[in-house]
Length: 277
Image (cartoon, rainbow, N blue to C red):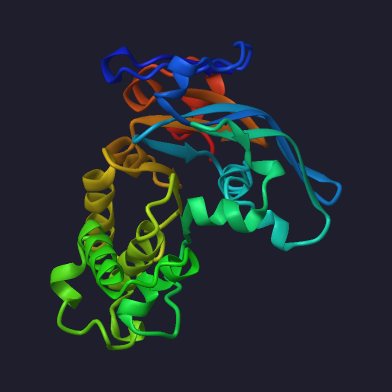
């Protein structure tokens, strides 16, 4: 696997054979995957993945269908634990504590790592209560604090001006693109350590897609984002780093501009030039 550093962004990325992360390096990282493998029953979907996630940057996971990118993404918030027969080996370390997420209570992990899925999935509640849901789980009860955090999350999701006069109305009354931005606001409200986006624009039209991409660009300096996308142009537009995966393995990881212009691995080059995938 090829893994490079990005000096202009002042982020040092660890190589698979590197020694354990130093305290200085942790300041620039939100998380680090170390020799992570994952099995759906007897089927091994991830094979010793080692990957550094830069703090307050956007990391894109790309690759052909079935390569393991969504499996890797969902490992970060332990979604696989909802189904019997799945198992992990290796580590996903969340900084600054250097806790291995695989050893923590999945409920506590999901309080710190938000996720948005391919299709909008608002709760059957009001717009306000959708965004407040995670805050209430965290124990936030103060009405003013709730209102302030809901407003900020909706502003972060570029949705406030569109919904501020109908917060008490059902979230189902929003358009598909608005519902997806609402789901992003819901994930942002608890101020997660990492925001996971699993092909968040695949069900949206071009206008709604552009709005979601704009908001990712807007929040990239305040939140750590990992996005799975089939759209290489999207990865090139919005991400700081890109990881290319193939058959459960991490083939190449580099600053996005470098990976798309000067890929070091033949598999990466063949994929981004359209020879397969």
